[in-house]
Each structure stands twice: as structure tokens, then as C-alpha cells.
Amino acid sequence: MSSAKSQLRKAVASRKTKETEIRVEIDLDGNGAAAIETGIGFFDHLLENLVAFSRFDLRLRAKGDLEVDAHHTVEDTGIVLGEALRQALGGREQIGRLGHCSIPFDETLVCVSLDISGRPYFHFSCPKSLTFEAVDFLRAFAHHAMITLSVEVRRGENDHHIIEAIFKGLGDSLRQAVRRDPRIEGVLSTK
Image (cartoon, rainbow, N blue to C red):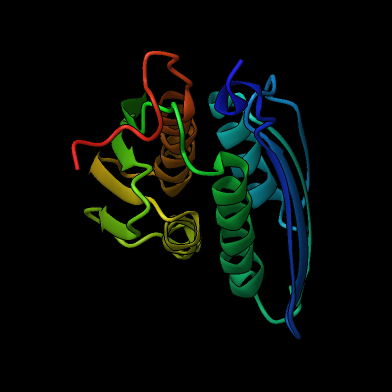
């Protein structure tokens, strides 16, 4: 059995600043088990959706300066989760790389596409401004995971529906992209 096939795709990442202290444990070959505590109930709910749709196992604990606002906690969680994903993927051997899905949620339709390319890029398109720092999380996650991530909100009026659809779509797209394919030798690339 090759080392890529037998490699455990798990990682631990952490970050401590004046504003936050975050620790993430991730298992890409899990069953969708989540133990998440950020101090921000809605954010915990979003991350639980991401885990349910990715099928990763995730333990995440974040402490932040919530007396100021949620921004540092949300953005720094994106940084640490992105680093953990990148570490767990190792050299990205035998993965399909690409993921895409469209998520309807009541009046909302969100499309999420990603490439685990090693080239960070983030694109976000939404017909309205959102009240939660989801964009800061997504940008930090994409850059630190070293992925190309595109999120397009095709329609939506309710912020909760839009943001929840984004996190579900991110989870499902990641599930597709990290799936191993034994027919792929090394990293899937034409270069």
C-alpha cells in the first residue's frame, strides 16, 4: 500500500494572539462529528453545518475578545481551520481537487466552487451586504488552506439563509474535493 493511501489525514493547528486563542483538530476521513465552541452561537451553528456536509470530524475551541466584537474570533478561526485543512491534506496526493455545489435554502440559492490547487484566491459575489463576518472567515480560510474558492449568492433575502447555505455549500464542495481516487497518481494536474 502506498504511503498516500495509508496516510492519516488528520491535523492539529492553533493560534494565539492578543485577541484570540484557537485550537483545531481535524480528521478528513471522519463521520461528521463536531465539538465546536467559539462563544458565538450562530458561528458554532454554521461550523456544525460545514462539518455535517463535509463529513470531516472537527474539534474546535476558540476564545476571543467578544466584548469588542466577533470579528477577530471569526477571522482567526478561518485562518486556523484553513491551516489545519492544508496540513491534513499533506501533498494533496490522490485527491480529486475540485468541488462544486448549488445549495437552495428557502428563497436563497448559493453556488460554491473550489479547487484545492495550492494557489489561494477568493471571490465572493452577493446582491446584498451581510451582517455576519462570513466573508472574513471565507477569505482567511481560502488563503490559509491554499485553495481557490468562489462563492456566488444567486439570490436571497434572509441573511441567516444565505450564510447557512454558504457553509453547507463549502462543506459539500470540500467533501467532493478531498475525496481520494486511487486512479490518481500523485497530485492531479496537467502541468
